[in-house]
Image (cartoon, rainbow, N blue to C red):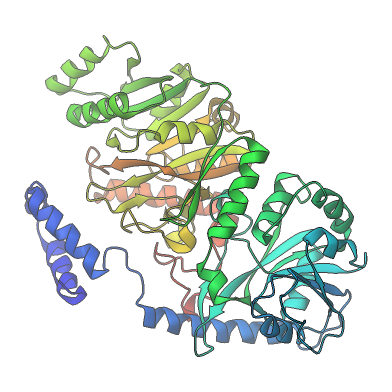
Length: 579
């Protein structure tokens, strides 16, 4: 079916009584057909068409150009920049663009071309066969700009670099590329520094500025390490603590070479080798999805306490527990089922039977539903070094899910770890939380198909997000206790997981979306609707608490991009009215 037919079908379904929709969902053949039709129509995740996407980017470029002209009506440059070009591919195009940046005074090209160097307007263009030999001769008063051969830069990149290096030792900018007719298309609006995304995709791979004060240390380090790509160099500098936090210039100031834009295997392989040798992690290049899959090492297997709250819903609980027990390769876990006032005989009977299993405990928590209080109670009773918050409607898909997540959770610089959660029809329910969606928070890539790579490959790649959902969340017990757990008073039902993640991140650690951990989340099957006046009022109180407490993150989530929309969960470019 085309998208217009499916749009009509969706609207019709939306008008159906809830009971009728529930009966229709029990017909698996019908559900599969509907899901397949949605996938084919493109309505399932609401991405703009290519034509609209291009139109939106053109409007953004008008906005960016206007802003840059206002910011820099005239410029007095304070520092010279040396450009280092990786590779001689399409070199003349690169050099001509560099010639339009007033404070770039020297260009060095790594990878001696097979022909006589091009005659260019740069009398100071020099050629080297290695990065360390090129950097050794850089004047100590000059900063660096690293780009790939074939890339072109905006004339404003020089002044934006100067501004960024006043605050950071290293910085990178957003990019796009030019199509065959020379039009600027496909912007890459990056998040602020995102180490996990760098490990998994090498997203910072060109347009990198380095402050002159770092050059001596960098020279010394490069003599002991072979660096073949800019992405590898950025990763090397961060892993070796040459730079604390790279800065991010959130404007498209560089046009990537078309070949390099689509050919990412070299960047991925160079990072995979580096991360593996530096950390002991097992890194696999997934060429199908264009990502590195990093399984962090475990010197020992800590006990993980999986806390599952429920009221009745024994069939859901049974499916959840059995999927964990039968499909999970990681063996050191315990399951704490927290019974919040079950009264169905079948559920009570099943929960009683669970007491006979060695790694399952059933604990009673009477009283009204308060998600935060129930889980805090569970953590107090848990024995594990790592605690896992798990909804009763979760079902394991990928056997290695827990090992991947624990591998992240035990790292010193990692806080909360979330999984890739799918609806029953394999559309994405959760792949990280963006703070600011709809004025509160929402799920990145919601309704995208399971196999979609996502924006900047972020659906397929593990990366840092400000928050993850507690439908399946792991965190060190020490971190959970340090922030006093979930907020029982102000956030009984909604946004308590977002609040928890932001509190944990405030300890100085990073939260992670683990793309390798895939599970089904048969969402909200066991909890009623929020449509009653009482529930609606509670939701608005909790939303207001989030908006007040985390106002600065809602205004600008560092793990997202200020150039992307907050109206929808699809990574579309902001519309003019949003700027």
